[in-house]
Image (spheres, rainbow, N blue to C red):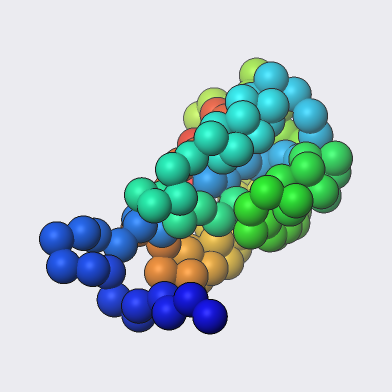
Length: 129
């Protein structure tokens, strides 16, 4: 039996709890890069967790490697194209409220999981995260 200490050994530090967030689980360039990134982390330094804004092929690929959660984005938010964003977006009350609700749920998840750092993986994830 291996005895794993509850606290880091003297002179060492605990791995940082890092959340990797992407708005989608579809396999695109950013999502492939995320898969490669989390596959090569030094687990002595990084304690990773992934949150995706939808279900898709990336979920199962990540779950075989790392703790992965789906926190589903509202359909209106998930389907918004970056070309349509601008000052007029602020007047789309329903979408803004849906986004704020999602941000609140994500923030609660981050606190509950004791995340120290958030890595966003796309433009949409940057805005939400």
